[in-house]
Length: 90
Image 1 (cartoon, rainbow, N blue to C red):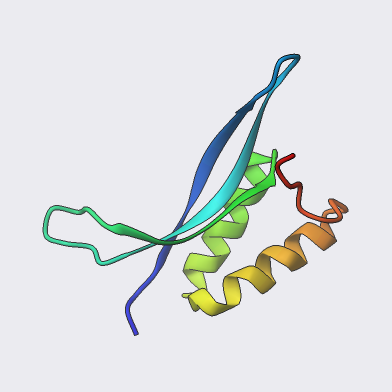
Image 2 (cartoon, rainbow, N blue to C red):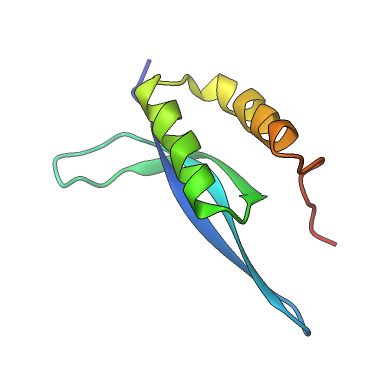
């Protein structure tokens, strides 16, 4: 199994009346000698709380979380933080 490193991704949603910034998690793999990597999974639009999502990403990296478990971790995070269902694009 390849090693996955997780990172925070920032998304900017612009509407006619407002702009909002939300954060998600990307999984990176295939580090090469230049330090570049490929995104192998992405879950966006999770939260607007950068500190909280950064702590979650740090825990995922510390635990060396397997990519197949990331969706469950994110669903638990959303439920625990009272966010209900993930927001979907109109």
